[in-house]
Length: 510
Image (cartoon, helix red, strand yellow):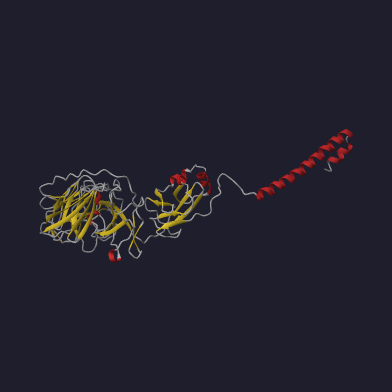
């Protein structure tokens, strides 16, 4: 300013007046801008920030869980009750958390693509008190966070699933996916024995529960639970089976009620001369077992042999083995079959068994070793019968030809490995055979070894009959094997074979 004013004083009078007015206007404008800016700053500091990515939400929502659990330790199979207002059309059940921006889009009726991609399939209904109940249609992932998010009023509540669940989960084996709610009987089976004090089971007031034996020939364990519906129930399986004292026994794989299915036309099969009619199927009776060939539609079989009850869910056209028969004897069998619509039929028959015999089967194939190929390849045999098998003249057949087995007596319950002459059993490369396993050395397996892409195998007895066959449909990774899920699992069912989820087990069942 001190540079400007000397020039103003020396200028003509009119020019000095104009310049003075301009400088005064400029100074007033500058002062006013400081005042207004300060006021705006104070106003902004006192007013809540607002953006499209944030919404005002309700207070924290109260959720309760069945079975009862803390919000950070929810069971993987659960039901969730919401103790708050719910927008039925705007409720979302998702994996992971839901942030303010995602909730804002949901409140505006524009759920994000991320929200849709993380959706969890579930069913929902109103309980007797009018609260919304949400139940996932499958088990939740252990250790994972999930969120219920609501559009109006907007809220989101997260919860965490147990990182480790010590309660076993039973697999649903009946009814099939096309089964209806008219099928009043549903069956879940365990892989391991169930410890049930007094055999008393409690699951739901409108359901009666009972315990029966599973069937190893179908890959199940020793226990199955029957739930029979006595009255209308919620639209999905109750999540937990307990004993009379309320202790957890097992979780039940969820199953939604579905629309009624049409009854199946239950025309019995035409049985071969070597088979016997048993209800709608045919039985090839052996010594301690019968191989039952089912019709071309799913059935649930419940068979009573002496004091043992066996439960078998047969898929369309599947065969299965019935155990527990007395050799060289008439065996009275009572059975009941149920189709997917709930139609039931029961009867009694007698199966006449043969004398005890050996049952040598191919139980595991190791075609893709970590060690050198084909040197470290092997095929496992198991005698599942009650008498010894003489293997002279037996052959292993594949697409490359036959390998004749050495003369060995394989006792009941014993294993043998068919290996090449140069097979190294030290365990240097892959798992070593279990102690006591016979090594049946042959010049070669296959034309150039067993195919890593899988190939069918047949075990042919000395009379030229196929004693056992193994699928060629499965392709194992290096260091893994293909297994028969149970020694008596039938050759003609793809469900009898699987990729081994564990390390190979030469000379032992997986």
